[in-house]
Length: 355
Image 1 (cartoon, rainbow, N blue to C red):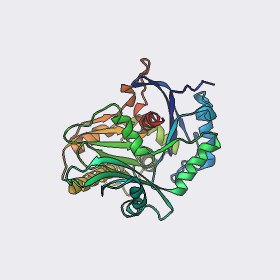
Image 2 (tube, rainbow, N blue to C red):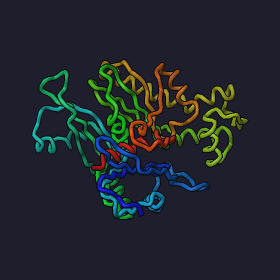
Image 3 (cartoon, rainbow, N blue to C red):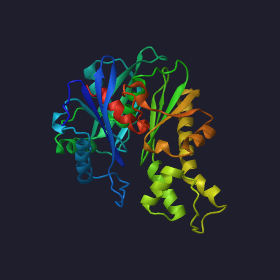
């Protein structure tokens, strides 16, 4: 087993499709990559669960992930992990200045007003972002809420493999932390982040002077694969391979269902255009709420960000530069190029936070 040094930090991202782990070591003012791994949760031939993998499925995969990295879970001292999905929500609000005690007591009510979940028992946390530039007596507060059931299930999975839970973040903020740790926000304008996973696309708007905004769009890798399965009559495993190599417009004969009109061109619009329309709807809402409409560019992360043709589609639709964000570009990697950097962005952001 690798000896876990006191300066090493582990970031653990348990997704709906794969488990991502990043181990970093603090080296002065920077971090050095010690190791990383991406392990699929489902083996070839296993049926993907669109409701998310259950604990009996995830726990053995977690054990395998740490074994592959030669890490003993019980020896890990600094770890951060994340939760996400419909049971988690985040929103920036304005608040008057309060003491910590007053803030704690008032935010649960605020969270219920601003962050509708499913009516379950809710846990709430917050971060003061600073003074409101438009109202001198107000401050900007980022509210984060999650259902207690979802939070406790996450902790139980970690304890089942003898990991002592540390910081628990939400996936959107962990991904943004990987960016802001090494990159300054532009003085003017907005950045749009798209974290494209398997079940959802997390959209976040980040700016130096404007409102933070995040929203989950239930269209991502799973929907892409389903679309290919339906149109080309492929199995899940076959569709996954086609998606990874050819994107959503593969050179394959379409299986006629009697519903397509105009062939491939019309069929191609279905899932990709739905995603584009949902992104556009979110941005229109943001512009209406804030009056800010100058976007500097789009940064993509997540496993589905590698979909062939996606960046070109987004560039054309929004007339913005689109880039894959690789958090390892700023880290010490010993000259090693991490091709899966965009998929590991959340885990990197978590490892940086794992004090």
